[in-house]
Image (cartoon, rainbow, N blue to C red):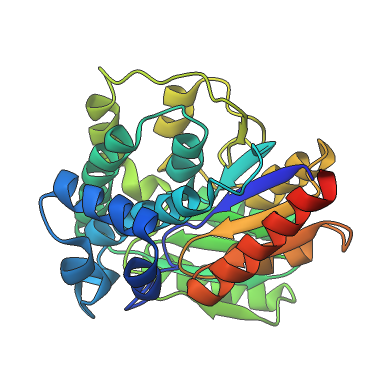
Length: 314
C-alpha cells in the first residue's frame, strides 16, 4: 500500500461533526481538547454544536483542522507511514501538520488567525462563488479573462476536478460571467453558499495580514511528500506557497493526479465529509482505492481495513 492522505477544506463542515468520534475515541478527544486550550474556547460547544458559528470562517477553519488531525491521531497506531498527503486549501495545513512540517500547536494558532483574517476580508469585500460544470476549462478561463479586460472582477478560484471549475468575484461580475458562459454553451452552474470569493484577489487584505503573521514562523522539512493545490506539485518552500494560497486558484485535480502518478494507490480522506473522495472518483482511475473517515462508522471501517492490510503484509 502506498497511502495518500486527503485533508478536507472549508465547506465540508456540518453541525455535530465528529461528535461520535469525540465520545468514543480517547485520542480524538485529546486532540480536540488540546485545540480548545489553544483557541481559548470549547471547540465542541462553540463550533461543532452551534448552527451559527459553524458557518463562520473564523470558527470553521480551526474546527476542521482539529477534526482532521484528531482522526489522523486516532488511526496512527494502525496506519502505515503515508507516502504523500494533499489538502484542499485549509486542508493543506492539516496535511503539513500530519507530515511534521509544522507542529499541531503552531498550525492551530496560525489557522485561528488565518480564519479571522479571511472572515474580515470576506465581510469587507462580499463576493459570490459558482461551480461551473464543464470539461472545456480553457474556454471558461478565456471567458473570464475577457471580462477582466473589460474591468470585471471575476476569477477562476478552484480547479476541483477536470470538469468542475469554481469561479468567484464581485457578485454582479460573477452574474455577468454566468450569462457569458451560458451563451458559450455551459448548461450547468451551481451557486455555492459562501459569502466571500476565496482564492481570488478579493482576499488580498487577508493575504497581506498572513504575510506579516508568518514572518517569524519556521517550518520543518516534511517527513513525506505533501502536494500543494496552489502549485499542483510537491511543496518546496512551505512559507512562500502558503502566502500565495489565499488569493491564488487551487489546483486540487492537478495535484491529486500528480500524487497518483507518483505511485499512490490508496486514498483516505480525513474530515467532516466525503467531498474530496467524490472529486477523486472523477480524477483518478478505479485501480486507486478510496476511503473516507468522517464519523465513527467510517472510522471503524477504515481501521479494520488497515489492520487487515497489516496482516496481509506480515
